[in-house]
Image (cartoon, rainbow, N blue to C red; front, side):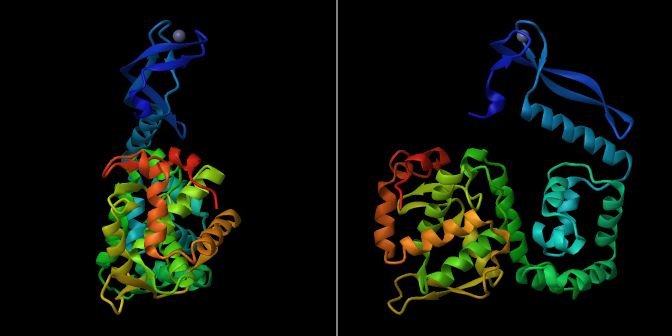
Length: 338
Ligand SMILES: [Zn+2]
């Protein structure tokens, strides 16, 4: 159940859990000293009729208010800001390096925060002026990861944005719409998952697809168990052969199309294994995340695909979910320790 479906909320006025309703109202909000009138949905206490804080409704209203403000001032929307970045094939981290802003700033702008006017002017310049982007790149390239550099160079050279970049985008979009309990309260980025997979395919030569899927599952659920959030922000699904990343076919296509890994058939033609095409760039992982990666890589080194698969079938995360069901990260709690 989503939070927005809950009808019982705590009312500070009544100091009780109360039944609530949602009403549509017109309200005036002030954005940078300017009044913006908007329709909005407000949660109301049924006992005392006080408006209550509702994270989802209130966030929706703010986004609407900002969108109206942007429209009025010809500013880019959060989606358009995202498109500027994708036009150059960059990850959020890569875009941050290019502009010399923090990755958090980019993420905030892409999820609805209003850029200040200097930042907005820069974004418009980058969008409309390739030469400007090229100059920024010359200054920033030493700070950028390999994947970002390659894609940006291709974009600057005039190559059409590749299909592969779109796949990463499609994947992120699909994941973004899911409840955060299935994402482990972390943001999925194509860049991070690419480096995660490059790491494992380097740490385990001739890594099979089956084993990789399980390594990712154990990495995310173990990290969630110990730190309260998943490492990759990826959702997992209960399939007959174990827990696997949701839309894993798309994920594999993305990796191969982008030439991040290649898939090579085993001599027996019984499945394929990963060959990394780059060194992983681990600069986007913090110390705790790196510790989880090392631990998972070490622990499962002796396991073959069948052994790690069998193990994953015994986890509550798998036993307690049905065929094709998404697996909630709440099951991380009962994950066996290693
Ligand atoms: Zn009340």
